[in-house]
Length: 128
Image 1 (spheres, rainbow, N blue to C red):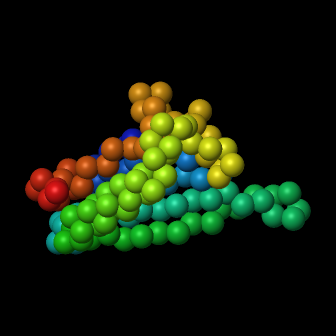
Image 2: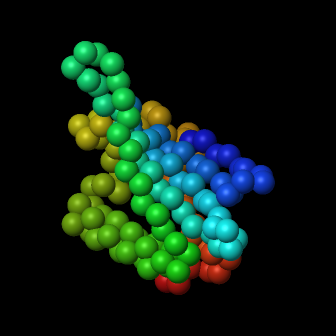
C-alpha cells in the first residue's frame, strides 16, 4: 500500500491498494474550488493485448461529502451480508482463483482489507 500527501494542489491525499497481480485501487481525496472535499475511487486493471503489449483499463467513482455516510453504510452492510452468507470468508486468505494475491497486501493487515474511515474526510464521525 502506498500513501501520499499533496500540498498546494486540488489533490489532498492519495492511497493505493494493490489487489492481486493485475488490479490496483486508488483512493484520491481532492478539493473543489470552494474547498469542499470529495473522494475519487479508481480501479485500474492491467490488460494484455494480442500483440503482447499491455494497457490499463480504469473505472472511476466520484463520491461527494454529502454521500460519504450513505456510501460507507451501504458498503459496510453489503460486506457484512456477504460474510453472513459465506462465513468462511472471515478466516480464509484471498483466493488466487479470483486474481487476488495475498502476498501483495500490507504485512500489518492480515485480512487484505484497508481501513478507510470516512469521518477523516468529512470531519464528522461516521453514523452507525
